[in-house]
Amino acid sequence: MKHVPVHVSLITIIEIMAILVGALSGFVEARRKRMDIVGVFTVAFIAAFGGGTLRDILLDKRPLFWVMHQEYVILIFVLTLVATPLMRTVKQIISERVIVVADAVGLGLFAVAGVAQAQAAHMPIFIASMMGVITGIFGGVLRDIVCNEVPMVLRDGKPYAICAFFGTWLYIGLQYADLVSDDAALWTSAAFIAILRLVTWKFDLHLRSHH
Image (tube, rainbow, N blue to C red; front, side):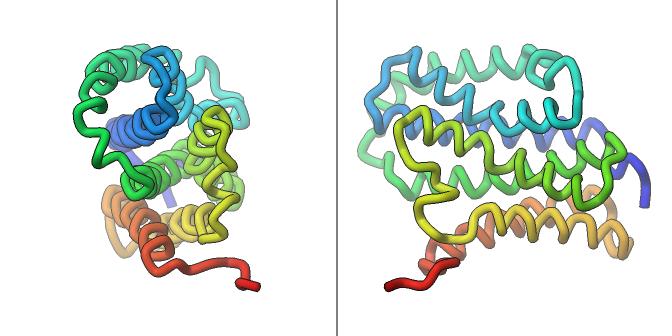
């Protein structure tokens, strides 16, 4: 298995997509809470960068990824200016479903980006998997806390972090088995995480038993 499994440019593409989806979930949640434009930007920023920030801190990477790439922050700022008035006109479609879908896609993208970054830093495979899970869930956790909600990962009892955990190990397994290219392993694992999370939500599957 290669030490750096995915080309840096592909990781960057995945990370940008994850940031956009994370920001979208932040926009929607902030709008549901009737926040002003400053609140919308704050929640979107936290949702987009929270997981990656904790990952970089734990990996002792400096500067943080969004400090190194200020264009990411500028992108969220511009999108906030555009999204805030736009969401006033589409507020009827803002629902929990939109947040769940955005969160599931973001979970998959952030998790695989996290495990790939950890592998690039030569972390052991179990630690790399954990870094993927942390990257996937932490932005959403912070978003919900700031919005005065119990984090989604804790409140609904449906598999969430476990979806990311399984997906990161799928990615690692595909690499070791050498069945597909590293790029294909990345996309396959991200899709697996997102779909698994949506299936558990759609069919109301729970980790705990109902009483």
